Length: 348
Image 1: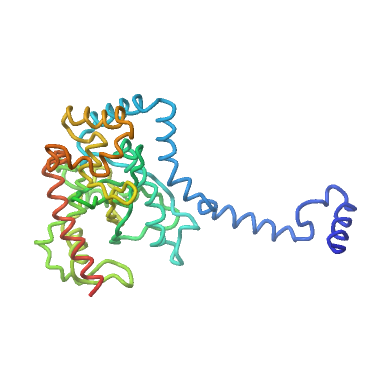
Image 2: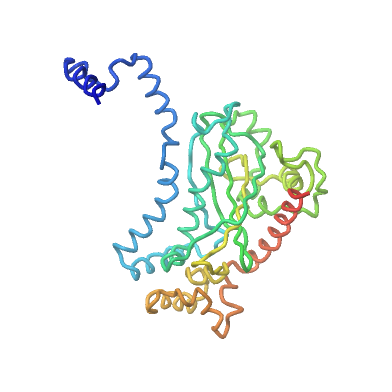
């Protein structure tokens, strides 16, 4: 206690100009400390949490300010403008800064997971917002990464999330990491597609390549020290190089990630088709009205129905199967085939 008192008396005896924090620390050390903080500001404690949860907080704020009825009416109008989930995207842009780099000054592999969380959260909130209001949440079962090209230091890149299929338990969410390199006149004339080519980006074609046309024994497998050179993962990469998707914006896909999610309420798993039905994603107006009534008119806001009450519906086996149509079924079959092959490759 005497030592503390001596230090306090010494500091108080100093002129006001010298009573700065740590006056005995050299100025260059202070500047270096400030520089380190500035270079790592994107990775500050809770920065990831803010980026992740701001979409959910904003949605709950809208529900609170507009009321559930107002929120659902606005959400339904938005869904009717883009009814097919195949066309729904969530995008975010970032720059590769010091805190996200590896020792080669490329975007670190771990940051593909860290930075992609926010855009996947945004996609799920924007696409299925109403289903979360009774207490439904999303749990991740597995994730798969395939790297095609590095993203250099200080490069701007875009993350684009979309759903490519679902089954009775799992929903498959694809995230693309895209850069838009500046092209010279020479590169545009040599590598540009024909003027009459269909330049629409087909995400399912990238995420679900035709494995039947790939041998699965590519000599150049995905990058990464622990990634197998052959098998389904190699087939995915080979299919990418054999027939890469043409993006209208000239973007280059550097990495694709596939995440398996399931909807949960408590410890009960809600089938994706039921969650999407409840989120008013069915094209049927009658189904939309039914889902709206479950949320607005039932005392528990549809909790009992989501926990298993939907099984008592006379058409329980068909509920939500019209969401996505044939495209969703094809995507589910292909993604289950690709992911099961990947899992077998990892464990072998």
